[in-house]
Image 1: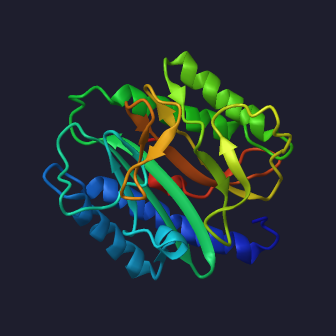
Image 2: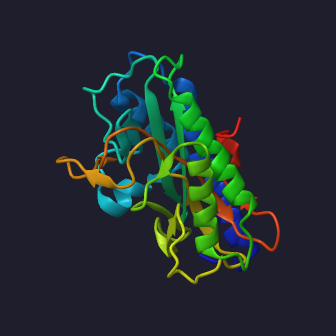
Length: 254
């Protein structure tokens, strides 16, 4: 969406605070021995308290309130009472929701407890790349140039980017134009970021895969060449200068 009134900005700030707070609290709550279903139930209770609805459920009938992906699962992991979290797991929580007709989206990959499986460098790379990408976005900047920046920064650190996932416009629904805000330079993409538009910017930084493939459950995505992936995501408003980071409260950069 494009922000045209103060009330629209207030609506976007409200739902963004809700998803950011939920994500932050879920990260603080999770501990080894917990199931991903317990973690999802905790997130669901926060969203319900605010009167917010699960965006993936509303949009796609996703079987959970939030997406929780663990280790070799790259994204869209289904919360399960059979999946028990362990020390050193690489976890991604993606929280998106609707509140009063406005939609917002954010995600965070992190290591549970001690980094016994050496995932922290990947997580740090993804966080830093998101920060660098967002700091370079303003009205008039080419979308493909931000993709190039993300891929260049990933390669510099010895990582790859996933080419069939991308950020997206958001606001009045979960996925809007501009879609396919990719982590690499699509030379055919001449689009530019527009001032006052709301977009969800996401990193998809990977150790060995460049594409994701869907598992038989119809949701969970893994890498075409295995390995691990870190994702970090903020919903922002594009301006003439520094973007407004609507989901900043999630603390993913702390």
